[in-house]
Image 1 (tube, rainbow, N blue to C red):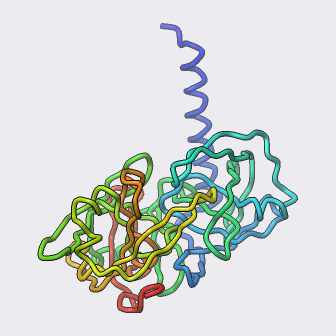
Image 2: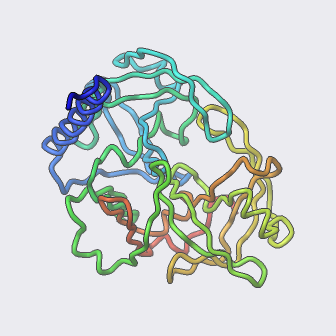
Image 3: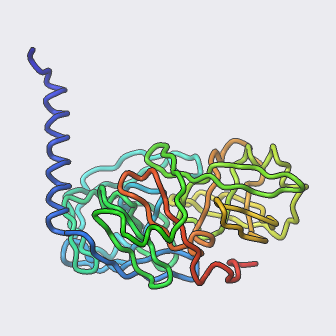
Length: 306
C-alpha cells in the first residue's frame, strides 16, 4: 500500500521530533540541576542565553507549552528573527496576534537546547523577559526544590520519592491538573485544579465552581484585584479567605482565594498558583500522570498581599 503525501510528511515530522529529543538528551544528560530565583510574586525565574548572544530572565510556567518572550524584551534582542505573525486566543478570551520565530538556541545553567520555537506576547511575570513550560525538558522527571531553589531533571524518579505523597495527575490540552478539596461553609467540595506556576496567587476558582458554591456570600471577601493576561486583557477578580484547603492528607488553613467578578463562563478551570505551590517541594514523573508532594520550610509563611 502506498503512503499518501500527507502521511509521508507526518512521519517525517515525527522522526524529526524524535531526533531533536534524542539530540537534546545527548546534550543534556540526566540528572542535572538548574538554580532558580523565587521572586516576590512567587514566580520561578532562571537565567538563560538566547542564540549565544542575548541574556534573558525566564519564568518556568507549568501551564504553558510554548516558549514566549515579551514585546519589551524582543525590542532589545538582536539575535531573534521573526518569520510570521499568527492569531492566538489568550487566557482573557480575546483574539490576539503574535509574531513567531523558529530555529533558536537556548542555554540555561550550562545546558543547551536547539530548534526552539518562540512566540511574542505582551506580558510575563514581573522581573522576567518571557516564559517556558515543562516541555523544554522532554520526557524526564522534573523536581522543583524550593528549599534549595533548584530545578533538578531526572532520567528516573529519585529514591527519596518515598518521603513524598503521591497524587494522580490528569491532563487536558497538555495542561496538568490535580484534585484538591475546599471547605466552604460546613461542606467540603472536591475540584480539579490546574497547576499554574505563572499565577502569583494561591487559588483561583473557576466560574461554575464559584457560582455553585456561592463563594461570594459564603466566604469573607477581603478585596478586589485586576489581572492581566499575556496579551494585556484586564480581568477583574474578588479575593476571599478559604478556611481550609487540602491536597491529599496535607491541610492548609486560611488560604486566600480569588474568583472572577461577572462574566460567568469565562474562567473554565480552577487554578493552584505560585503562592501555594511554593509551600511544597514536588516531583512530576516523566509521563506527567503523577506528582509527588512534600511540605517545605515555606508551608506556613504568610500569603501574598493578605
